[in-house]
Amino acid sequence: MSSKRSHTTELGCVACPELGDLGAGKERWLVENPNLLCALDTHSLALANRSLILITGWGDGPRLKIRPELSPIESESITALEWLVFDEIRVIAVGTSCGYFLVYSLEGQLVHRQMVYPGRILKIRLRGTKKDLTHQTSSSEEISIVSRGVIARFDGSDIQNMLQEWFQETHSQFWDEKPKKRDSDALENTHKRLPYQLWNVNKYGSCADAAITGIMPPPLMEIQSSQQYYCGITIGEDAVISAYRLSENRSKSLVGAILSKVVPATFSTIASFSKMIWRSEQTSTKKSEAKPQSFAKASPLTCLKDHPRKGEKLTLSPSGTLAAITDSLGRILLLDTQALVVVRLWKGYRDACCFFMEMLVKRDNVEASTSYYEPSKSDYCLCLAIHAPRKGIVEVWQMRTGPRLLTIQCARGSKLLQPTYRFGSSFDSPYVPLEVFLLNGDSGQLSVLNRSLN
Image (cartoon, rainbow, N blue to C red; front, side, top):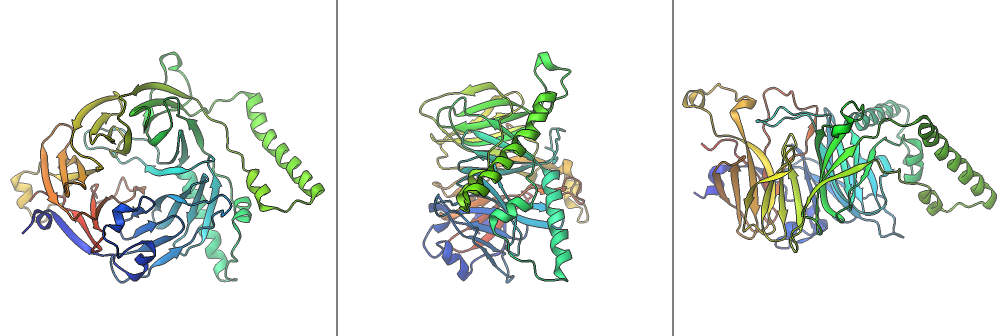
């Protein structure tokens, strides 16, 4: 028996004819296409190329194809993909190369469309109040959108309220008539523009990835400030790691508050009046009116420059207190995001992918031998799963300075995945640990890394 069989559990197979539209059938199709995106939920897998999204399970359930309305003039494409899960509401979030944030229902209907910032969206990140096993740090649930040199933050409650309103409206129309399909511009005008904060974090060069790690204390001179501050971490070509204090910028002067309300309304009125005079009906004019909002204050804290090393991928622990960063020289850095120091380093892991997970490594013999014992949160230990595709292995290391617990062999065409953070899931009982999954693209087999070493 191989180590893979003893330390993973097969869940099912995602292979289906529809995967052929995304390149399946060719060896290593899942890992060799840089435009192929994957997002995992507890029961479904979403995959996307530049123009098509496929949602499938690992059973005989229905499959869904979504083709977002993208601008052919600007060669717009899908560049980011993630699940949004709020209790019973499950939707797909999409980022595009033109800076649009799109949300689709599992019936393929466009729920929301909003310009975040002009330019390619690199990542959609979800983070919430789920706490690390060694830290009792918590913060509000949020969705952050990363572009090159820019981070945007949406409050989770705003997006949840928007989704609830949309689903209530859709279900109330069900008995009257089937909802009519609206074009993207009409939908953008109909739905509320969700509030968000926006920060410029390109002081040390454009970023390849970024994340908001949590709330941080204010500067020493602003201890009594009513503003809230976040810590932002970026990685990129010019600086392997950079850190910023991001101001929420809540307190505005009266003049600023008036201008923020009056100027957009005035601009909209002038634009509408000029359209009426010139009888312009081009859709491109509508899109040009979507102006990005101004930046809130981002104060640089520190940066690590080590030419020619470049930061490539970033993953956060559940509380955001640790970050694993891969670089172009095959190293993995473990960063303490509160002290902003590197606390551990691995070498020889080119093209690696990392995810934090939780394992049962400290249970005593009494508990382990009790069949009805339900593990609690304190029984689990925080670990880091490292997929080294060039070696064909997955390693699991105990945090922060613990030993390597596992080495699992995997196929060359495999990809490491982790389910999306589920909003409001922090108080689930029994406790559901952070898990990591392994998808073999060539066979379609999906497996989960076992929670226990036994």
